[in-house]
Length: 439
Image (cartoon, rainbow, N blue to C red; front, side, top):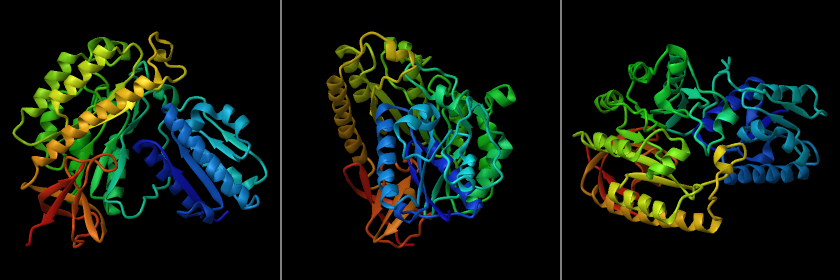
């Protein structure tokens, strides 16, 4: 084998895993290519979180299986990631085209395919509750101004709808030394925005150091040399303390961007979801963040169609969204995942009703987002440039890549990774339009 192709699916944590897989394979003297037709080894780094993601992962496997078949057996097809960790035996039985199935911490076993090219290999750790220390660097995707930096893995929250603890294991933090070493590597390789990701960032350190140590970690990362941004994702609303909010606001390298997956606002549903937070606590937290003089952005996610969600409870959620006017908001339709308590709850909501509620809430948020954008016209913002292709495309401190809005400039006189000041001149749907002021 000389080359490999990775089809990347799922969340930012999966993106980091894919870059480690690529780094390992490069150490085995394979070259990464970006067209599956050009590769000897085809990899689907899968997501198995909800039904829609599982279907997308299986569809990707079958699509690459067609390419493999058309190449007359000269290619190998393997599956990595959450889906393989969760359903290895079923996938082995149902998809004979797969030459290998590897769990979350087992991708280094891919090298056995090089040694036994005619054998099918299934490598799966029963328990992924380790944080492996790899002796090879991540293979970073070219041309991106940002990089995700995983600070922990797994989860102990056991929300009733979520299968992540069963897939990724117990919550476990990386050491500060390991995180900072990787941060230095990312900055040395041209990244200008470090996006800290985990299943729950606010829990960082409690397993290693006897209590949360996120502020200390942020302090060490922000002390690294250079001009760069830090963005913190996945903060739990039950554990986002005032001390951390103060620190984020005061540290100029940290974006005033609060990623708070609230999931719902009705107290009964929050309780049955296992969210460990009430509506009153959520409202106090939002008021606390918005009380600062420095501008902030709040991103959240909600689940519609959770078992037992009545029309009145959904309307309560809609009124809350309308009143709260979140800067960024995502909506998910509830997916009944086998093995989770919520899958057996009474009052499962009809799929058609879920879809109606999904679109209704998204339409409401769209109107809010467009109105919010009108407030930015005439104001100055720093943006980080992500792309220059005829026009310049970047993001403010209040926007995460791949999920939030962008700022577009007609001219292409900046370089990816550059941080520049622009004036917002208008909006186009979810995105903003801007001009770079003459120096």
